[in-house]
Image 1 (cartoon, one colour):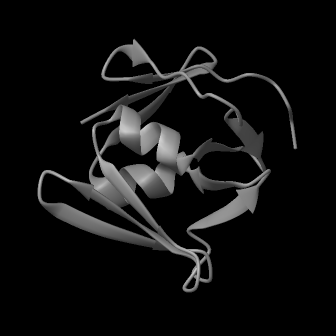
Image 2: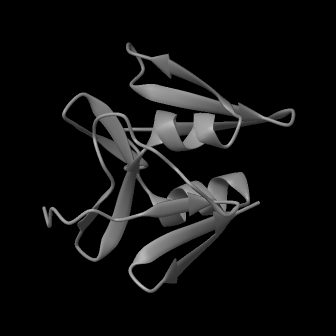
Length: 104
């Protein structure tokens, strides 16, 4: 893992990650799902048995599955590729001068 800090802005506000920070794997930015979804105002539910999590926002329910490669676990956090998150939730993700901008 490249361990540089990557600022992430959601609708113009910087997202604070309490423990595990975003990082880059194979040129792709990975972020902790719960932190980014809750900053967006979504509700996140984890299913340990199925190894899936569900994001509920504005009446939209989207499921992410570890087996499908949607995310992987790193230091106890589900890390998702920003592009996957953006595509499944309908968010616009842009790389701007070393930081990531996400907008709905």
